[in-house]
Image (cartoon, rainbow, N blue to C red; front, side):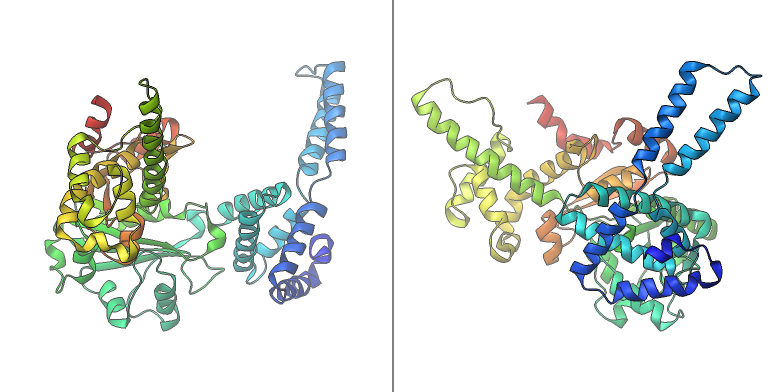
Amino acid sequence: MSLAISMSKTEIIDSVLNDFSEGYFSLYYENRRRLLLELAKEYDLNRTQVCELIKQYLGGKEAQSPGPEDEGVLTSFYRIERNLRHALKPKYEALFERLNMHPGGLKFLTILRADILSIIAEENIASLRALDSDLKEKLGTWLSPAALELHQITWDDPASLLEKIVAYEAVHPISNLLDLKRRLGVGRRCFGYLHPAIPGEPLIFIEVALLKNVAETIQEVLWDDPPIPESEATCALFYSISSTQPGLAGINLGKFLIKRVITLVKRDMPQISTFATLSPIPGYIQWLLSKLASRSKLAEDDKSQSSADTSGSTFWENLFEPEEEKAIMNISEEFAAGKNGMEVMLNLLTSKNQEWSKSAELLSVLKTPLLRLCARYLLHEKKRGKALDSVANFHLQNGAMVERINWMADKSEKGLHQSAGIMVNYVYRLENIEGYAQSYFSSGNIHASDEIRRYVEVLFFL
């Protein structure tokens, strides 16, 4: 590693980089961790030198403020600024830059960053965070849209590429070759971003269904047979976006991919007027269960306090409207015990094998509160001013709006577990994409349809 960073003889640098990458792959996790920590700490920038250069710069500035014609003074400042820029560059940047130019080096860097991220997830180490930030910035530059090739993936592509599509599909697993063939056949499209330095392996890919209307369930997308004639399609539905490289986490390749695909589909099929998604809501149930557990406990504490003190507590809210609370309590004796509606709902949603989803009576009672709370989660639950849900944040920052939420849209075990089977349609309106993206970026403003907003109006007027 030291040689790969410091060596100046270009004629043997490829051999050194080969030895380094092969040696790295031979290491077990703990030894990789030790090596990355050494890289982050021992090959960081020289802060003593940085401080000295800053003192020189500030000292010169206090002594004399150069005028436009003071060439000697300006030359001195330029020299210090150049040296300061060089000093602020960590030594490990040389390794990243050399690997990027080395055959197979870009792929190796994505693996290196994946390891860094896995260590940071377990240990919050400042030097590793700085290393990751630097490498992420480099990868974002090297993987700019200009360097990527948009490729339509078809059944005629090499088997090795198709195998990667099957292996990396992260949203709706591909069950068999027939399923894959349908996703690449009539009425369907699949596009991926490829990079010349990582041949035959898409960095990210998107699956598209050509439909008459915006689909409400994933079942109708995956299992409609036969699909409609493509000439009758008026909607391009993005139903799966999968990144193939864990080491590219946080680098928004999907933003550019969606815009390129919209442009391409619109060019080839001018009759397509609607571009929408059918998206999962991966954080909804986790958020809701946390709310139910805490509010239910506060409700019980409030009752205990009220029995001794008529003032009661003002720090808890019932997540349900009165009629919802009543309906949930009416089913509690038969299906799930609980002292209040929130406790009953908590017990139902955490029941073994999602038993609640198999009862028509329970589905009827739970539909309204679960949809209403889902709308609240998507529109009003935020982290650092942006949507709490990761998929929502992705589409909103790309310029989409929240159009519709769909009940029992994904009845798979995964869909029930992460969002009670609810899915959401985001819509990309070509004339509004840039404006919506900028509004969300600058102020966290979430654009949504009137239908979605009606779900949460009651919440703020009660």
